[in-house]
Image 1 (cartoon, rainbow, N blue to C red):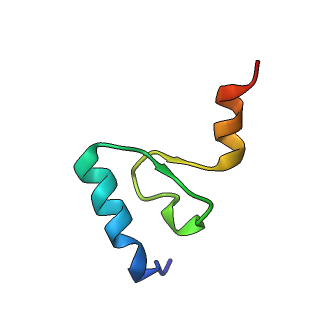
Image 2: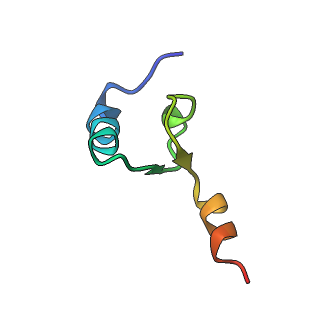
Image 3: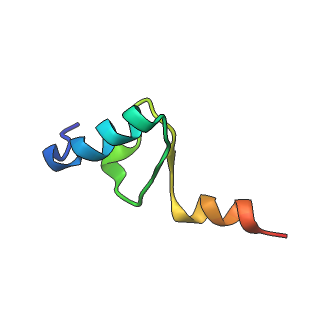
Length: 47
């Protein structure tokens, strides 16, 4: 699978901050880091 070469700064920053990634960009899925989509974030805020 080919990845977008322009995505690397976001991955590097998330690794440096030990943070998770919130994106709709499918290139980030399967990279070995926690990646969230908006529809999953909404589950955290439901009453």
